[in-house]
Image (tube, rainbow, N blue to C red):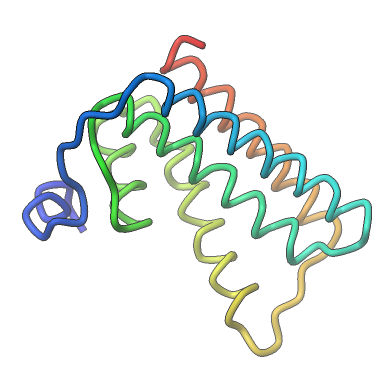
Length: 138
């Protein structure tokens, strides 16, 4: 899907967010990172991967909210990052990979995650969050 399609279909739209909402989304991302680490400690690697994606999603939304954009589609959040922030190309691909993994973990019949997958996901999500902080200058 292209960014123009996301806006024309109403999956993204302009919306003025107050600045505190941006910071709240970053805090939400950090909370989901903590959840991912707790899940790893408890051996719940599938839930850790879900939390990894959710942390990335909230971090990405912080950028959209700062830009005055409201989302109604996970894929359009990724599309927005990719098209509006070329420096986030690598991270938008990573986020999309974890979006698909999240779907598998939540809805797949034989979904299984390994500890190594979960730990790698946490490391990548930390990098993702740092890249977002750099864009937001926080």
